[in-house]
Image (tube, rainbow, N blue to C red; front, side, top):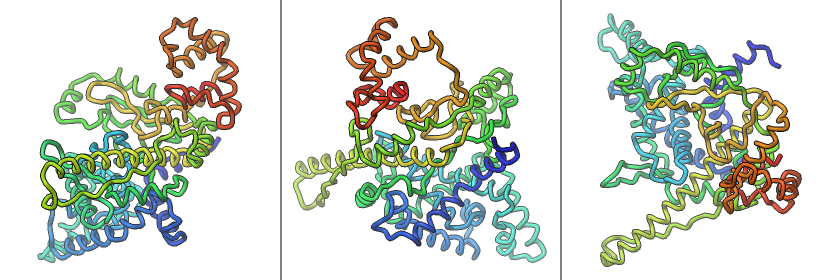
Length: 474
């Protein structure tokens, strides 16, 4: 067990050094590996990061020469290469998280995420004493030397003591970075829809490149919010809970009306409830994590893994070169292929991110999931992709850190649980005793799954929730 002070230092490093470490790892991989040998996510970053960094540097230069967009303080408050990496990884992670909804990555969603990521990084740099001086830039822009220093300090104070969400600075900066990424990264495009929000996608060439070179172990992508290696800070009267350095509200995306209602409410009971949830210690299920990587590297068993086949996107002819009816059919085929390709990409990004979390938290026991409420009062884990409320893959990767013997009655309920997870041929609808009998009747097949998950008969792959069924078999 590590000393508490060491764990606190480690937690602060995880919260504040994520982008810096990703940037260092990305640079190292760029120098070491040719494009043909690189992994999917890192490969796209190698293409997009240099031109986006150059575009941000040009805008920073314009700001120093007097250009004054709404986001100018925030844009000069972080190094250009960090902002480029925050923007690109934020977009790739967003594409991964939408799952089967490839049109779910909207401009507003990405702008807010990227801007918030920049705010987090700026706050982390301040806490670690390495923040860029906005005061110097602000002073240099002032035409009155007698006021320049004071005005510069005022600008920096305004940036660092104001909640960016309140002033919408996160949205303004995120939108500016997204616009630069669309123009200069070479891997992104936007789809403008007449009846819905504008959405962001990888180009078909970028999708093909990603899927051909994808190798999760080398990726520079990881979630913006991670589990904690120490118990989260407790919520007290609706404030101050969760991470050490990252600021969270008790309610996700709290709007003005919610904030006003909370200011009048007695929040002791919901605070205690959230604290009970987030103080529960977890660890990785080591056997599932190891098998997870092996299966993904082999791309077997196919039925329990995301689709891996590349979807060909047909070229879309010019509207002028064909008749309207034929063009409409070709357009529909193009859009359907694009959506299928985006779904495959999304699943790959999700898998890569899950495995990145496994790499990062392998051997860390325990870790914790800070929690928030939504506007309906439901509790949710803050970390993304791998958490106790996620999909079958992620939930199979987790187990309680403080295990207890099942006991005689516990074994009964484990059998019920297995039948519920299998959920084929109506087994999950049987009376409890019937579900237990089903497990006893299939005992050998279940034990074969546990003892030889990849080499045996693979009974577990027939389950509706195969990875959690396999964890139950183990």
